[in-house]
Length: 262
Image (cartoon, rainbow, N blue to C red):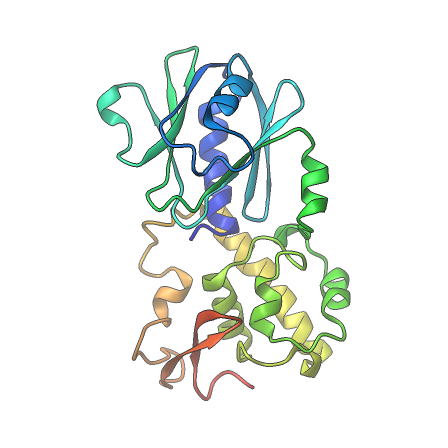
């Protein structure tokens, strides 16, 4: 599933394909992922509009329009963007496509239909409505420490809580726990100030590296974070200890038994 670094990559792709482009027409093949209006209304709202910029916050990409409205692109499990010109290059699972006046087409593909596309009149009101927290790359240690103070939930649940920090998902949360040597199920009210600082520093370090290296989530390199250790029945390459799988915060969770403190 695309997380902050992967959506950063989508932002770069979208910006190169769409910024400054005017939508001649928007073609909707399946409007299930368009969540707050019909496909026909969505097409009408976009026709003739020009994309002026984009803002990424966590896993959310807001495409800005020349009327000061936004199109929210939330990629769900496996949403994707595809820029093309020839009909034969259209994606098999394209749900809708922006047909730009210059002849280019930007399709939104989603085989599982878990994406969320919304037309927003007020981006900031929407962010407040869903209680979206600060982007992980804008997070301060002070905010993070204050946001988790007094909580008795697990560290994994905190890292996945988009109102505390926006952009982390299951894979990167496991990586942060692995690097800090803290079990994903450890209760945050038992963390020391040094533990909290270590978690915060790993959030920033991992997200910075990942965005700078712009991963495509369908084709990670072999040495990409979890590929080095997060394997069923595997062993930790640093300690030789066994990798275990459990459920934490309702999510499949990998950890190294004996390495990560609980």
